[in-house]
Every structure is written in C-alpha cells, then in structure tokens.
Image (tube, rainbow over the protein chains, first blue to last red):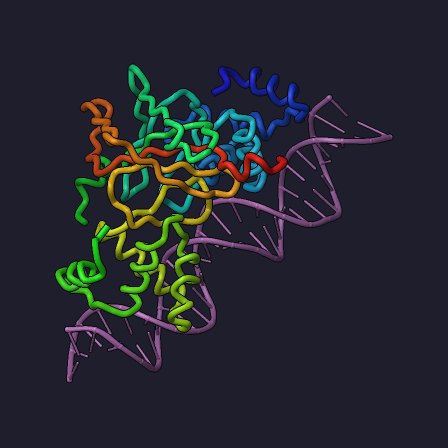
Length: 143
Length: 143
DNA sequence: ATTCTTGCAAACGGTTTGCACATAC
DNA sequence: GTATGTGCAAACCGTTTGCAAGAAT
C-alpha cells in the first residue's frame, strides 16, 4: 500500500504514466475500503463523487495498479475478482456463502519456503494463505 | 479422492444420486489427470470416448462432486476454474504467465490454526496455500 | 503539439439455466 | 412408472477490447 495519494502520484510519474483524477479516486476508494471490494463495488463508490466515470476505466486502473505492485487481487474461488490495497503479508478468510472476506494477521507472518524439488523449477514470487469457512451472519441463516 | 470408481458409485448411491456413465467418466478423467484441468479440458478429454457428452453435464457433475467433497476447485487468480481430485492436504504453485499448476507436498503438511480474534467469528472449514511464480518454460521466453 | 487516458458500447468467454427428451432405478 | 439426469442452446455476467473524443504534460 502506498501511504498517501501523493505517493501514488509519485509512482505514476516515475513510471511515465499520467496522474489523472480517475486514478487518484479509484486508488483512494480501494485504500479506504476495508471489505476487499470488486471492480463494480469500487465503481459504485467513486461514481458518487464522479458520476460519469466508467467501469472500463476502473478495470484498466486496477490492472495497472496491480502490475505496479501497488495493490493485489485476492484469491477467491468465485466468479468476481476482489481487490486489496494492503500489500503487507496477511491471509484471508472467505465465507463460502456470501463471499465476505476478512483479513488474517499474524505477529510473525508464516513462511513456507520451498525446497528445490518442491519448486519444480518455478521461480517463486509470492505466497498466499487462504481460509474457507462461514461468516457469523451466514451461520445463523438456514441452509 | 475416492480410491476407485466403485467407491464413487457407492457415494452417489448413498446420497441418493443416480450412477450415470457420464459421472463415472468425468470423475475418472479428473482422477487420472495430473495437470489440474479446467471444465473444458475435461470435456475435451471425455469427448474422445463419448462424443455426444455435453459441456453442461461436465459443469453440473463437477459442481456435484465438489459439493460432495470428492474434488476441489483450485484457487487461481485467473478467469477459468481448475479442478483437482486429490483431496489430500497440499499446496499449489501457479505460473503467472501460462497458468500451469504444480502440486506442493510436505512431509508434514503445514497447519495454521487461528485464534479466536483471527477467526472474526467465522467457522473455518479449510485452508489452502498458494504460490505464484513462473514456470521453467515461461522463464525462458522473452517478456 | 503530442502522447496518454477516458467513456462508451460492443464483443468475449467461462459458466449457468431452462426445458424437452432420455436414462437409472 | 417415476424421479433424476442429460444434451442442447440461449442467457448471463464479469471482464476485455477498440476507438473517437478529451485530458495531461
């Protein structure tokens, strides 16, 4: 996560990309969100202040931020991609019913280094830990 | 993973589902595959012996097997769902370029019990560990 | 002035759905 | 004979793409 929008602007400039109003508000919406929103969630959020922004722009900006390593997509088993501006090491718990996602933090983030044979020749760039379960609200509902 | 197709038939009967030719060959195709195929991969495989099977049936059967806990969907960040008949605890390495998936086994499969505050009230049903990287073939290609 | 970016709308692709016919039991 | 499952095709929906108009530098 970039600490401030000024830092985002710095990264964009440094890489030769323009600093646009849309990129700033999209990044801010994700940074201020705590519930791992989808592209459409972000779109609905930013539309409140910029009613003519397009969903396509949201997708293009999110893809760019991800390529720059500023945000991550969260791994779920479901149809819709979810995003997270928090790049510190942490896991996720996903509700199998409503797909709500919560963060899991550890005092010491777990590490699972792989040995040579486990790597199968891959270069490893990252690791994620992911729990599946049911959130408190969905546990109360009838099946 | 169910050891044999006879066991699959047993599970289906026990739950009140019919044992059909299609379900048997779909499960077998997945069980015998080592590369975490997509629904369409499985469809192309079973079509070789049963040319009039439909892709819809493949999807419906896979969903049923997943609900019965006989197979799992593999967590990738990409558009297409991938399936695995191996239900023993293991992780996956996914190539960010070609999306090839390899298994990761440990002598002692890692466990990460969560404490009360980490669970956020969720009931936890499972955990998965997931590496992102680049496979040997894609490392050789130019970007 | 030039390059990059946006908004729009159509296209795309994996998945789901509805239903008449077929199959398992 | 009845309930369940299949094949087919259309619908669905999140995402991507192409391009003319607009904004950033």
